[in-house]
Amino acid sequence: MSKDGAPDAEVGIDLGALSNSLGFLFRMGQIEVFGMFYDALGKLGLKPGEFSVLWVVHLNPGVRQGSVAQTLRIKPAHMTKLVRAFEEDGLLDRHIPESDRRGIELRLTPKGEGFVADHAEEFFTYARSEANRLTRKEAEQLIHLLQKFTRLGGQT
Image 1: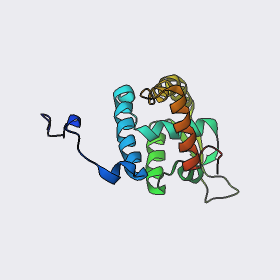
Image 2: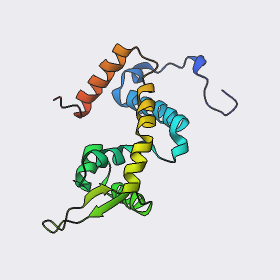
Image 3: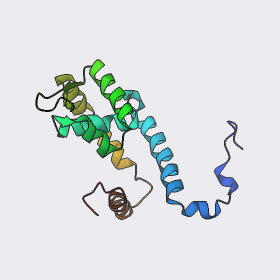
Image 4: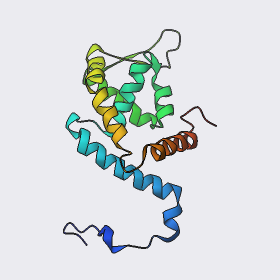
């Protein structure tokens, strides 16, 4: 055990079949990537998924809130809280169209567009560094497989 009570990686704990579980490996990968995210971009005050929401709205002005939530797999209640927080911060505007009062369309404010413009390069530079433990070919293969698995890369 280390000083903080966490198990030492050098101990070589046997994970058995757990080391072949996609769910387990995804979760461990998520923990690794989130730690790297906070080290690199914690100063922005964002959580890992928040810039993704702003980026998607930036690329799709007028997109429906529900569509963003569904695409990024954000629970509707959490998406509502996130949108409200972005709205309070002056980054995003909500609009309810006359043609469908049930839908909520999202657009970045000028401040939101500025935030995305100011931080996109830093965010995507970080994103490229996520795979720094892999060769370029391995990273491309992993990204391709994850796009296929999550159905986010146009693959079926």
